[in-house]
Length: 477
Ligand SMILES: *Cc1c(COP(=O)(O)O)cnc(C)c1O
Image (cartoon, rainbow, N blue to C red; front, side):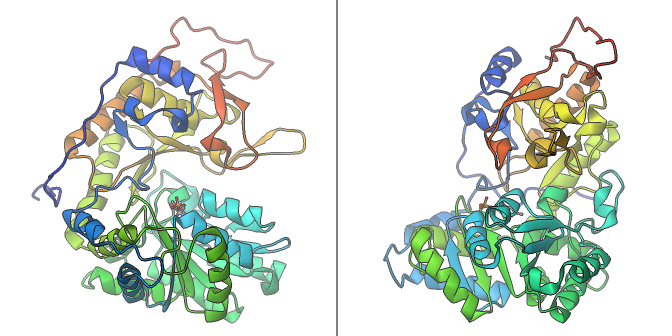
């Protein structure tokens, strides 16, 4: 097979600033071993997130110039609205400045104490907004989704039996919303099948529970459906996308993902009564309903990006580039989530660093090692992000200890990705020297963004009863 090439030429470039491992060691220490506290100029390859980091197309930049900044009734809004109506089939479109602003509005209305929001897996901001309202977020991921290194085609699926059981247990009246995240970001960027969405919709309908899609990566999910689900191989992606949304009562979206925009988001839905409540909150917190926290130029860039993302040459390249990195790592024996997800490669940190106890955050330790060794910035999706404490102050760990290397859209070339693979493999070969971390400061919610950490004394985590082992070399440069 011929090489799948990047389906674009590069017109404008940004420099990468180089630094040395010795310099990065100091930078990491000063950033308290938290990648969010590192300045981006100090990063060589930034895989912290695929959110808002896309390269915009020349068409999007042209759209930026055409943005109409009228406070009310801007033609840019109507282009934005029409594009989203066409893609989703949902008549009501409410712009917000990010995905989480859409979530905040939705759950301020539907959440509240005693309520449960059920999902395949809630993203961290979604869960935080649900919990802030007093409601509880419930992840009902399918069995395949719980085994990171065992491949399966649709590991983002919701467990429909668990859903039925949960509804029977808690009562449909206490479940104001079911939300399916496509692809499942916190569960490895794994896709959800059309069949699963249909099955969930059926259960929701029978119980009068509205189904919303967290649609951040709808196009990537649609491409997986085309590749892997029977009956979709010859369907055009926009048709698959339209079918996917047809089972939903509404959606939230971060335009910083599959819309190639640097900012933005929206809520879309069918229910006018709910939309009225949403707009009332929107005016208070975001802005007038025809701009909702965005500039007219952003609305243009998002509308154009939403159309571009469904291009099949783009999606083939996009999904293949993630798979390319994943396969290189598998060949070297590095424990990674399998199969490759849609937007990121996920290292299985507790298998990569089996000598680091979960309460010494193997994922965060690995994030630090990748930065120090090769200037690669990644993010922990494990017990630092999702861990809780029990009444005795002991850590209740997350289900998975992952490190996410999110690939920005249309930004890095194959040689960048080859470099990333080399760095990860070099770190893997020196993994025994990596030390666990301990938290010295943390916030009550979304602690991973601001937490400060420091290395534990010994490279090998020990129980108090064991004799601590001493290592002469603790650096992995
Ligand atoms: C990024 C993301 C969000 C939140 O969107 P922001 O624009 O960052 O506020 C919600 N859900 C998922 C699945 C995401 O990936």
